[in-house]
Image 1 (cartoon, rainbow, N blue to C red):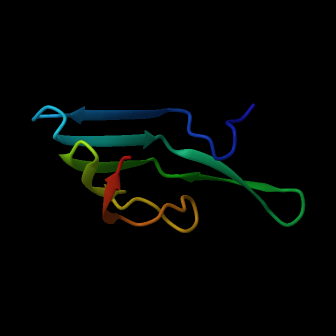
Image 2: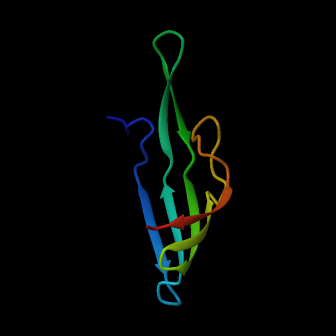
Length: 104
């Protein structure tokens, strides 16, 4: 008769992608939300202590420019809300990256 440890009772995910200039440029945003999560810590002896990890949300973004039909330049930003903590949710901190994709 208790909630599953580490599992959020409610969560939501969403993604929006637009291509304002045909297939040349693509911009996408992806979000995630999870409600608070219960944890049960064993105490010395037979006891347990309930702890609740706070709710959290993340936001990621990606921009891609198709230079030619076979070459794409892109940039990504992950965890823009900089969520995470070492005890309850080990997410990497906010970060950005760029790259090139080639197709044969």
